[in-house]
Amino acid sequence: MEHLGVVLEVPKKNQLYAKLSKCQFGVIEVDYLGHVINEKGVMADSRKVAAMLDWPTPANVKSLQGFLDLTRYYHKFIKQYGTIATPLTDLLKKHAFVWNDEAMKAFNELKLAVT
Image (cartoon, rainbow, N blue to C red; front, side, top):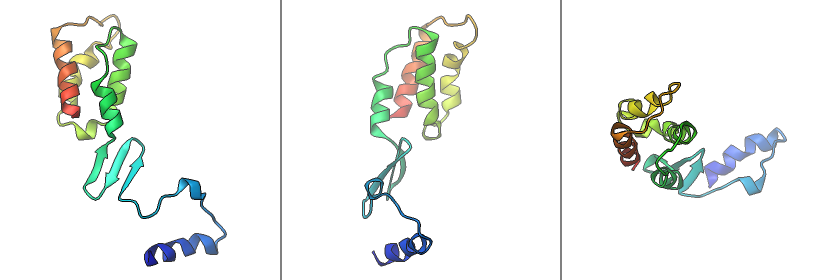
């Protein structure tokens, strides 16, 4: 708390103020841009992971793009993301959307990799 006081003196001296309703002090976990940051490190937000797991099988390019956009945001947490997602990104090419067993396998592998 002493360090916090010292840090907050700098903006105060420069007549800068924070909106208290947007501040959190003394918490052990912070949500930030879809990530959860705590003493263990940075993790994907569990609500976003649940959304990826509950995503229905894409029936068109727009639905597939939505799924890939959501998973791509968390690619740093998924080992070999590009390799797993390649069959799905290939379906985004013009007139290439044909859902097949390979796409279904990649879709399920990506869901599994997220968890």
